[in-house]
Amino acid sequence: MRTKRGFVLAGAVVALALGIAAAVATTGKAEGGKTDGRGQSEYTIGLFGDMPYNALGREQYPNLLENINDSRVAFSIFDGDLKAGGDGPCSDSLYTTAIASFNTLENPLVWVPGDNDWTDCWGRYGPSTQPYSNPIERLNHERQLFDSNDQSLGQKTLTLTRESSEGGQYARYSENVRWVYGPVVYLGLNVQGSNDNYPFHDTDAENSTAPVRTDAEIQTEREEETARPQTSTGLPRASSMRSRSAPRGS
Image (cartoon, rainbow, N blue to C red; front, side):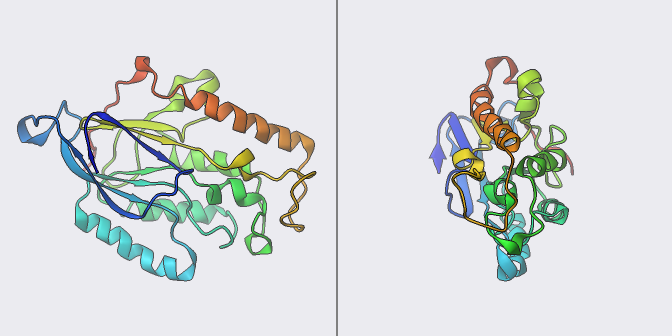
């Protein structure tokens, strides 16, 4: 992918092909191939998601991570879905195992949530995913694990600007991120399906074994869904565009 100055958007709502994507910027190089201390002006990134899915995917996943390391990408983006929808519950181990895998990557990894990570944890895919979980509780758990500071995952890290750094009404949205590498600005946004795939007890009957959510729980989810797109549009605010994005670590 050849690009001049611009934006690259990574969102879980977009169906993206797996593999290695090249991002080549065409601005002039400074000494050592660096531009403004924000990374090389010509580089390759890794883009993957929707994995590992099921037993075969879990068996093959370490090979993919090893391949990314061998490719010497500047950084990688995981665009959501840590498991197949019906492949077990949204247990704590799902997230800790994912973080351990991401941290085998030698270079930075930026994580974006997917619907199988939290919105579908209420029981959309049936008894194979029991015990069911409250989607908002799972999202907040992910925020604590994946987004607790301004650093990406990986053995080397990128400094990210999180929407939560704005404070106030934006404080909860730590998963929405922006970073700069070379001449390119990247955005990662948490954008899921209609009503965040959350069931309405009066209209949805996809899984009769799932617990019926109360009106209060549904209203909380509606408010979350409504607020996130409104606040996410404020992410690239000019007042806070000073991202420090050179990789850290050895």
